[in-house]
Amino acid sequence: MTKTSAQPVKTRIVIAGTGYVGMYTAWRLQKKLRRALKKGEVEIVLVGPDSYMTYQPLLPETAAGSLEPRHVVVNLRQLLDRCTLINGRVTYISSKDHRISFTSAAGEDHTLRYDHLVIALGAITRTLPIPGLVEHGIGIKTVGEAVWVRNHVLEQLDIAAATEDKEIRSRALNFTVVGGGFAGIETIAEMENLTRYTIRSYPNLDRSMVRWVLVEASGRILPEVGPELGKRTVNMLRDKGVELHLETFLNSAEDGHVVLSDGTEYDTGTLIWTAGVKPNPVLANSDLPLHERGHVKAGLTLRVPDTDNVWAAGDCAAVPDLTQPEKICVPNAQHAIRQSATLVHNLVAVMNGKNPKPYKHSYLGSIAGLGLYNGVAQIMGIKLRGFPAWVAHRGYHGMYMPTFGRKFRVFTDWTLALFARRDVVSLGEIHEPRADFTRAAKS
Ligand SMILES: Cc1cc2nc3c(=O)[nH]c(=O)nc-3n(C[C@H](O)[C@H](O)[C@H](O)COP(=O)(O)OP(=O)(O)OC[C@H]3O[C@@H](n4cnc5c(N)ncnc54)[C@H](O)[C@@H]3O)c2cc1C
Image (cartoon, rainbow, N blue to C red; front, side, top):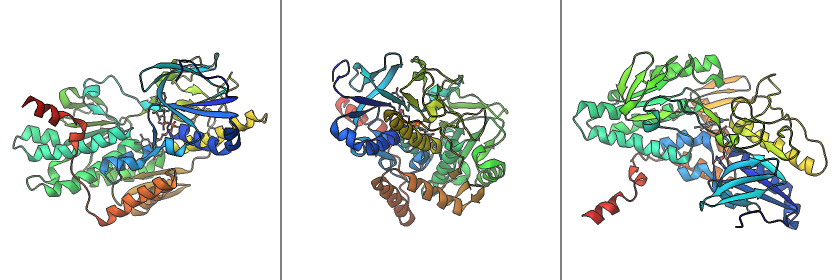
């Protein structure tokens, strides 16, 4: 690769980010511009750190072991075979020069010229300056995090079973999740379900020793499904023995000792932080107009104001919500997928000298999985809970999983789980793969 871009290509579309918006945009452009791509009139280049797109809504089920980690990601090189994928991280965007800068997976710095740029850089976990949080906490936004959480939680049961020391055992069996949105509630429900099932294999442990604690700053959980279903979810979690602390903050987690604002204190071996996201901070390294919360501003047509050829969508973009005046679209996959469709339509229209159209999407509803055979949903005003909501959750995400191959694998995982016993061993060793080798070398 050269340090600066090659010149002969007529129109180069660069997509920064390879998540929902990045993948769907490239996939749709690849279909729409098939002829132009074949003739070499257009080039589509994606820049992102991974060679896969992560289907984030299925990460809690991945952590719980209902799905294989490799089955919730989409191989971009296979899917986007007429695009160019560069593994790297965008470091700067200059709309004035029509260039982005990035550091490649090889550690080299490059710049890349574009004729059109799609900003699809998503959001990152929003943390707060709470003592001990960075040292002990983990998010649930990547496949790596989901796999780690699974192995770590199962390992805590092994630790608890291997000791008679009350303090060590209690610390291992106290699990904490902060954040009562989708990610937090689905994670605590799935993981509680996993530990309840797994603990039956430990003769010296029982369910009453396990404590799952949810901490939420506001007075409600799952605001997306409405107050009534939110309350029912609270009751359902309490029935399962989950301890809910609403209107409560995590004050400290130093040395794994949790202190909550309602006075509760305990030691925990597991701290999962899902209390919100913020737009990708790399957007600050650009000459683009930013919204007060750090999103890149997008107009009604998803074009960035004061530019002809920069487009933005998804969690990183402040897109006006035409269904709710003065508001911007909330960060979710529903908007990301639909914004990508409008963005592709508009980008191609502008390339052909036509007018772009505004983005408008009425909220269809929300679905959350709450462990095996349980869920909660609000779809176009219809409220579901328990088993029907769980079926709707699996049906919706199974169908939305991109590509037939992924759908097949996801549905196969789910079907297998109906007939086979759950796989519940910790493979924590994979997080320190060289440990045995170095021990052997020292002995
Ligand atoms: C656990 C969990 C559960 C969820 N459940 C739901 C749900 O049930 N329903 C729903 O609608 N939404 C849900 N969401 C939210 C949904 O997944 C996001 O809204 C969606 O992924 C946003 O798409 P995006 O393309 O904007 O961002 P992402 O999909 O996050 O993609 C951003 C991409 O940018 C890449 N990137 C980051 N930094 C750089 C850089 N410097 N250079 C280049 N690339 C970079 C990332 O690697 C990533 O590929 C959930 C999210 C999580 C974490």
